[in-house]
Image 1 (spheres, rainbow, N blue to C red):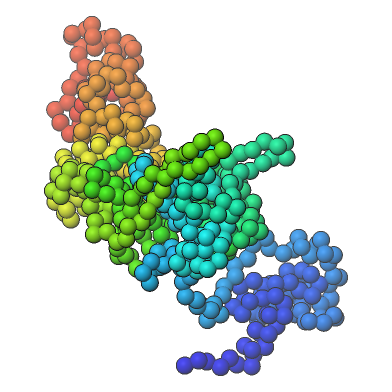
Image 2 (cartoon, one colour; image 1 turned 120 degrees about the horizontal axis):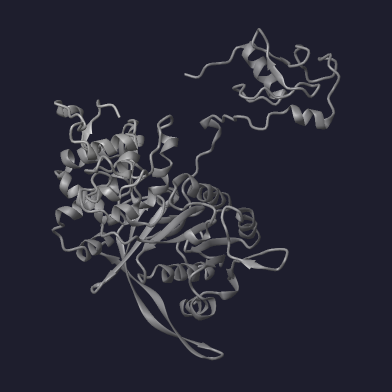
Length: 526
């Protein structure tokens, strides 16, 4: 049942609206004199200078009006705006590409096209561009040719992209190569988020329906770490807003990493933000039996749409300097096989070994960022029956980096190593020892990541978390004492231990007090 506001409440809302305040009073607005309003003792808004209630006309406030510049300086730089859901009109999803009555790519969104090298990702987007420029793509762009912006970093325009566009029947007058030119006349590749406004203005001016970033990672500014979620989102979140505001598809090509898993979305190189921001993800895979596209994410539509089979045919394109031969993608309809099927077969058959299962578990468990190692191990053992030894082998195979915290060891996927180094943001107040990197993890023996180093004599003060048997008189042992907070033995004391058999270093009868790293009891003074 709706509640009718009282006369006093209605009056307060009207006055709040007149002074620039929302219905919920989130922002106080400004007084008629130009100064900021504040809450009075009776919770009414009053002038922050004289305390009088402002009105819509003159004479309601005794303050001398501020100049325009002074008034601007009084206004808060940021304010929270709350809009009730009842004031937001619902709308159905607009599908830029519909396949057999089901939406695959929503208009005004970021889409990702991922796979290993040579699986036809770029060829598919050339096909998509050709359909859009011809007005033939089933969906919201059907019936009217639209423009396409193509940002290519890896492929040559004159040898590859233009011949492929010609072979696919694209209207080349509607496909634009995008580059950024400085006032000095120098030309650079698009860099996001620096060039966001330039891209948004071009989409609006040329009525662009599709923007291709080939590959997407190369379009992100080199000042951002593409393995750190919050840095990647500095580029992708504004890009998603541009897509939403213009209605264009922002299509990015991504590559799989070298892991042997079967979860296509988890194989995407770089930060997990790439798959999180995208509203739709298409995975590509090929083997001797054929080539398959599987939609692994469809946030706004059905999640179990059938996979599509395709093949690449050779096409000849006449040019002024002879015939160019390129590949052209042809869709063959629905496929009973999926990308996961192909990745499973390539990875060793239907019966995955224990190590492969452990690798899949690690990818899924760590897909959203770093987690405590003990928590991941317990989950693997209790939920999936994976032993710690098998998990250690999988960690070595995936080059899992580690980070020691006061609360214990943390681990992450190599692509999230930047977040692992930035654990101080997740666990404030704890000291951060140096992390064991993915490179260290790859070179370590199974089960030894961050724990045991046989060549302990080669340890250095930076090797926090490394355990071994050191000569207590060696330089590494002295360094280790300083790291563990123990006083170092003086050179004279060490020399006495070596030369004077009548005064050997005392020993301890309590094993719990024995320090294997130093070869002596912690309680023995230096």
